[in-house]
Length: 282
Image (cartoon, rainbow, N blue to C red):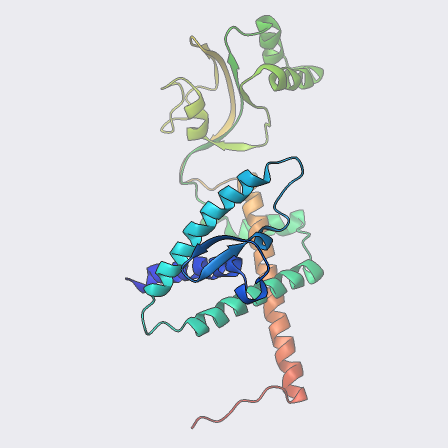
């Protein structure tokens, strides 16, 4: 059996082992199932019975899952190669969990999560060549409404209206009656996603801007599409399209910098205190 398969199985096995409990502490507990030398006790299910639900069904379902996990654990242990250092894996896994937990604590306590508009725009200007589009995108309004269209004349009037006070009415109408609608004119969408909602062939990723406004119907729906702007593949993605991605990147970079700074700080402090020693291996 290949080691790359055994390692994920080992992690599952560790979790399953935790559920088995310490049998020596449960001599007076009620056993529910046994798999080889592992026993599931009723106390392992403490807190798993919501008020008003049949506890028998919950117990039976959990026992079935537990048996399968315990069998997987047994088989994993039986097939572990002799050169696999379980103790080291457990230590490394524990260290990884503890380290991740502390990093999250540092982030929650110390990380400045505010990313200004200026920072985002500066990041975009410095890195926008890396954000070439892999697929066409467009800004548009889109409505897909079931036939027969309820108050069809009112919908068409609101759709074609340029009055500012009619737009909230259009949004309210679509919220009530449309199967799907996109009415954020600053948001970019992948052309393929819009095309998938329309009758086949109306909008193509090869030429997304060939039709700026469409109103069509079939036997199930009526469709409204108004295209404001589009970008073809390999063009630079607009700022608003990658803004959230840029924010995540900036925060990730801050977090990495914070953790690295904390490690260096601890290194300097503990070296001065004599709690760190580097031995000469020559």
